[in-house]
Image (cartoon, rainbow, N blue to C red; front, side):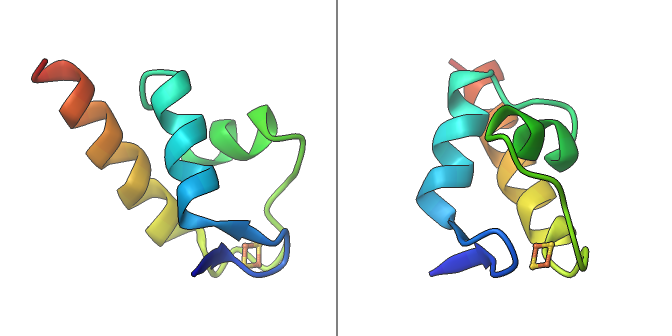
Length: 61
Ligand code: FES
């Protein structure tokens, strides 16, 4: 399922990028690491939630 339709980023791609970077502070940083930028911005809340989950799971290990 796409998290970001504008950039064709699916949940796994965003999650994987967050995991590799220990859950960046912001979704925008994750997008930058993937070489894209937010466009409409509709996805940022969901992308941020994924980042937060990955960050929490990294910290609890
Ligand atoms: S859905 Fe991600 S920028 Fe539009």
